[in-house]
Length: 567
Image 1 (tube, rainbow, N blue to C red):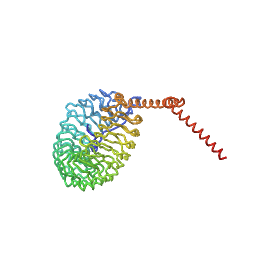
Image 2 (tube, rainbow, N blue to C red):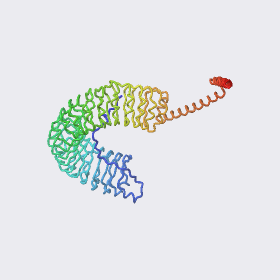
Image 3 (cartoon, rainbow, N blue to C red):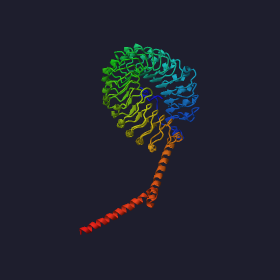
Image 4 (tube, one colour):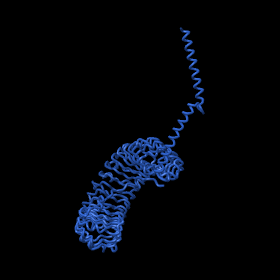
């Protein structure tokens, strides 16, 4: 079983260009329905656009995505006020000419439809001259229709990812207002030079193509802010790229880079840099001069040490150094006092230095897949820590959890899977903010009763251990949603009860507690009865009582005799 790695969860900046709105139903009077401006009929298993919708003359935003719609009726032209139309993820094979009558349409999404002769089917779209956003993802386009480039000159966002494009038409220079273009998963071998003639471009996404080079003309994109070039075949980055001085995000992960240009520090506003999965082998010294960096990905880059200039990165918030070759914890990291996220998964670390406590803002720490012989107690003094990853799916296994774990009062997620723990310390019950506790695939024999104090716990992963029973009060965890217990030799509750889920486990524990309370009550009553009747094992009480009376009388007599003698 693979361990949880924080580095696999961390992702680069996510660009959400969709529109999220509330759902409005059509179950209203006709007078009120005529004034509906927004309608969400997404994911309703619709086979066609309902005629009632096509009568809403005031409608401005219509969501019909994730249905089974096959055609767009000519009545669509009645929606003259429509500004936003989402039709992605349907079964539309062709577009009717009447779609071009929507003169006020600003945003259109036709992605993930089986359009036949997709390029030819987009004639109606090319007549929508007011369009600002056009999404044509995954349409199997082999070319971008020239008509769109000529006529849709007001476009500001164009989404063309997941097609078969290898070139862009020269007519695209008409799109002088274009600010964002998404070209992931196409067949580009060169960054299209026509893009370098669009002066307003701010976001260019060419991930997962076959780019081997970047033209020097890219320097003309002076407004470029975000450039995504991950998963290509780039062996070097031209100096001209670093003349795009407004870049704040640059992702060139998963390429063939061995070094970085010395002109990199010219990007004085760079905030996020992705270099993962390149064969750098050494930490590029010039990185230490990009003092604006807040997010730096260096996963699987062959690093063994960090450069001393790394300490200049005082603004760094996230640092991913996973899957490298560090045998000792890089001392330079301990001076990055603003660091919030650190991933050192899958290295060769044996211990953590005491100086790690200087990372007073650290919230997430990934240490999965290292070579710790003992639990690294030093991490327990990171008071701000919220997520800790210490799973070991191969090699060295931890056998104990240090009792200092209870100091992590802000901890929300703790991953200890694939080790050899036989027990958890009672102090784990002090983690009052814990929501996820992953202990699967260990050798736990029992759980401390203190885990019942984890009132915020939502997931408690315990599969593949050696548990025979659960704590009696485990049902008193009000927020618990997941409690997998497979491959444990459980007797109490029985396996068949555990297989029915948390509710069944809780009922079993409650009934067990009720029976135990009743048994205690009966036992107390029976003992009281036996004492009163001097029966059973309590008959000795009668003898003791008689002896006590005799001694009291004798003492009384002696006392009185002495009293008489004195007199």
